[in-house]
Amino acid sequence: MNVFDHLGITVADLARAKEQFHPVMEALGFTRYDEDGGVSWYRKGEPELILYPVRDEGSEPHTHGRVGWQHLAFAVDSRAEVERLHGIALEAGWSVVRDPKVYPRFNERYYASFVEDDNGIRIEFMHNPPREAAS
Image (cartoon, rainbow, N blue to C red; front, top):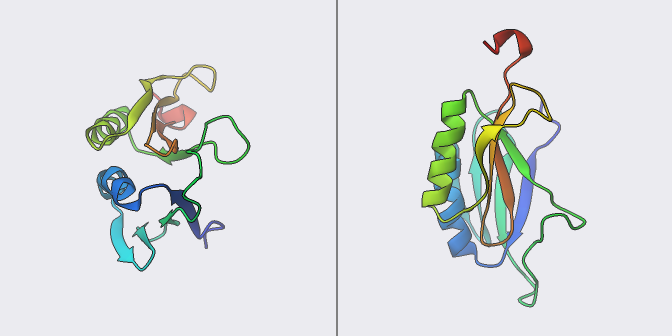
């Protein structure tokens, strides 16, 4: 059993957030469920991702580096998959934070990209194979 069951994220514009999240989540193999007051994506064996509309219309978008949300990392099977998902996110309107590259500060195998949506929500696509499989 997973320790994490779901992740809920509040967004300023639910319709726009669906436009940005859906292509990425679908490419990751998740199925979308539109529900009263929100939208979610589910894949068997994985925590559910849920988007909720903002309740306080005066809320500011999230700012990376402040207390709270930092980013969500999606582990994928290859560098090519990092690049493919990065491209899908950009086509869906996400902004580049960091293009796909190796992050030797983590280790010589860590390959990742970072994107951010209109709400300041940051996600990472990362491939970090085990040391013995890194050839």
